[in-house]
Length: 141
Image (cartoon, rainbow, N blue to C red; front, side):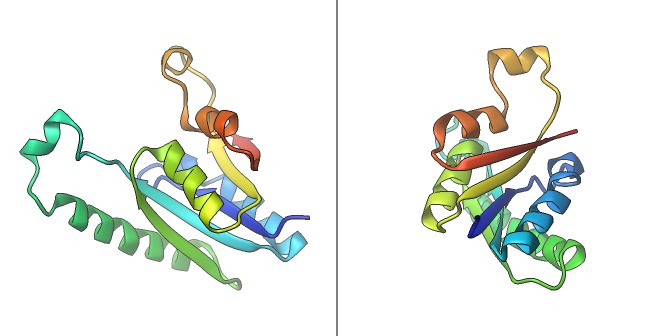
């Protein structure tokens, strides 16, 4: 049923993958699907604060994220091939672009219980669900 599954992870927050990772692994195993794991580095280039960062900040941040993602995959996932992706930009857009570019037909992601700020701003999971044409499985805390 599914050919490729995308699992977005925030490497600084275990809650972004702790419950979603086992679900994604089970789905890939059940359907013989590929597993893609993505982490996103926030884009600061257009922000007013970007002038306070060194010119090579983004390059170093991407390199660090790639190394940390690689360590995460080695530590948490075994027995299957995993495609690792590091993107720069707005998180929900990067997730959708990665799914499109890699033929992912399911996005498995964690979400937390809504808080008051989420009703004003909206969590990443909500943005992805509203704006993608892919199936999205939200795994709640």
